[in-house]
Length: 506
Image 1 (cartoon, helix red, strand yellow):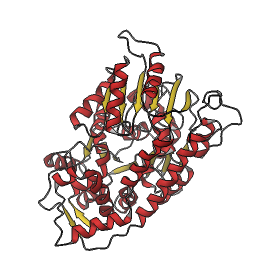
Image 2 (cartoon, one colour):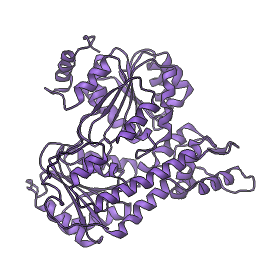
Image 3 (cartoon, rainbow, N blue to C red):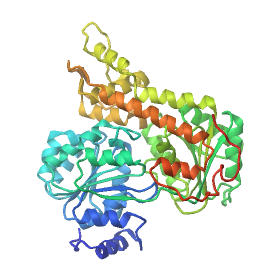
Image 4 (cartoon, rainbow, N blue to C red):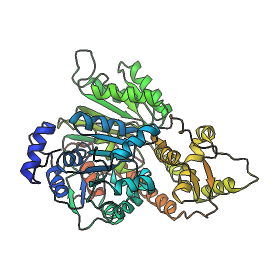
């Protein structure tokens, strides 16, 4: 890679030469300049703000390896392919890669044959990999989707909280990036990663080109008709479909299927995406959407991370998700091209049962987790959690097992541990083939304090989205205040409250 001196002008030159852009997006140049100067850095750029470039560009300009800890192994291959298309020597280390390929990648590290390496936080706990990294020239450690570190954030992943241990073997600055982080989450990220006097770059969360709408109506045909009317009201392409893309988020696989069929009956053809689909089918659906071959997609929250399409004109939530953070991140996929766009969420008092169910599933009661631990450790128990059993009883056992793994109360194969943490986003994929006894109790009584804290925070986030739904004040101002930004005193004029629509939610 280039040995250009580390200056802002050199970074802008690399931006033009390697990426074809004439200017940085807001916040990017400050983040890149801080990283290139060797400082720890924390960046909060909204969805579509260009976080990926903030570690790809340094990979061109820094002499060693840029290591990226990423939460979703299901997206890593796509990230690798994008980096390679730019000319970077990129690879990933995940359980999906054959062992001989993993060994080839590990051998390439100390030899200096890689510019960019993606791996999960679980993989970073491997002593073998840590030794390889310690013998390599690592210029930057990047933590992507850094909100997963914090018990105060959504998508909490305890393995992220142990990434700081890598600093014992790797002497390199750390870049933490995310799209949604309240002030408390930012402080927690900096503390857990042990960032030393970090540069903090937090751009505005305001998206003035998005109309923020919440509509109260019971679930059913009228919601679908409302979606179809808005989609048909946009300009149409040569094939009769909307010129700009549309994402419809639905809470469950069954709802995704029924909403897609109902839209098709109204003349709005779309595709379905959820974690229960086989990996190949998910990949094909995602690729058709990203390439523009399909314009409308109905999906669960499994669809979104890494989706880089600028011309999304509308994002609908058939029901609101369980947190403001998730809602803002998903709705924020609209209007990345700067054009006027719509974010419409539906709500009714009965809808809250679904996010409450998901919350209880993701953060099970400590009593249920302890019961599973006793069953795994009892010689009289017939419970055997092999791959087939995990698939069959996944909805109940996997979330509880994940917390036992996080508490070091059970031993699991490393590949299985990686699969467990990624499970909600790829439940249609079979567990990796591991040893005959993939899950064993250690005999250690699990410390479930992190689970108790995570349950408390999940309830607080659910209360936050319910307050947002029934708020009578400006939607844009409510979002900004929640995310720690003080809005201007003016009415935004482009949300249902400021437009005078009656959409009071219970």
